[in-house]
Amino acid sequence: MTPADAAELLTFCAAWDQRTIGESDARAWAYALRNVPLDDDTRQAVADHYGVTKDRATPADVRRIRTRIRETRIGAAHPVYNGNPTETGAEFAARRRAQLTAAADGTLPPQSIGYALDATPPRSVLALAAGVGRPVDDEPRPYISPEQRSAIRSTLPNQRATLPALAVSCPVETCRAAPRRLCKRGAGVELRATVHGRRRDAHAVQFATCPECGADPGRPCTGPEPHPARIRAIAAEGDEAEQHRLARLMSTPPTPRENRARHTAGGIRR
Image (cartoon, rainbow, N blue to C red; front, side, top):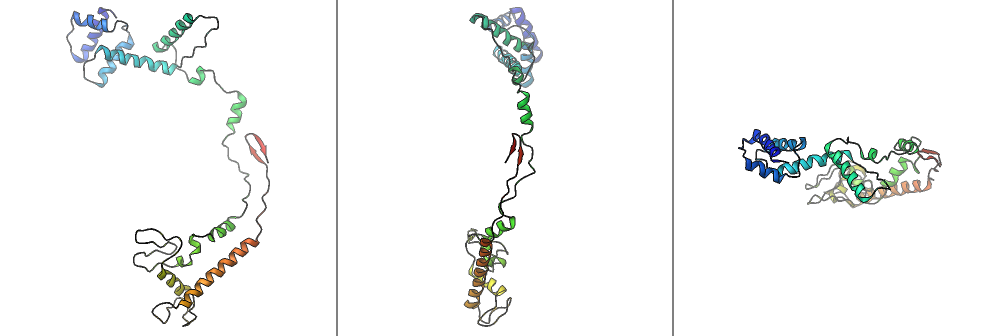
């Protein structure tokens, strides 16, 4: 950049910051930007600077913003130099430098990295990729039916189905768990393996007949609390029903799994 170019650039800056320009200013800017030409990128750098700040532009600002503008063009162009086996190192450096300069100047149009590397997949690969992710409707049947799976899961330990007392709400004042909800301790921790004793008693009163006083289901015993025999009776009924359910499941053979051909992207798999 010559002093005359620097004076023109400073005049361009003065349109925003109303600075005064002297010969010494032009010479100083020309020396600071001695390897930067006065072109559209330099003017764009000044405009970008004053577009985001009201501070006066300095040669360092112009150089930094201009470099960023040109590096952005190079990144968008993806310049790939294939080279020449017969060229020398100096020729390679000169041609590569010319290619990068063309990309920075904007004369090398932007292109994708795949296009720049000529990395288009062959048609056979594209055909296989088109079939990836398609739904497979012909799925094999499960090993056991959903009903059998639900019945087996209901007999596992620490599950809600193994706590018959969950059929009624908990009468404990600090719990008040609704039917099918686990009881909770004072800190709000759920009891997964047991229930409160009063809930167990309420379940016995609701569903069992008392062997001692003859109270029907839903009616309280003659004493202040349910008789122990009534509680044992409802517990025995639950254990017996669970044993019958397990025996029925164990005696039912699983449904044999059929081998079906499945159409996949790679062909037919059996």
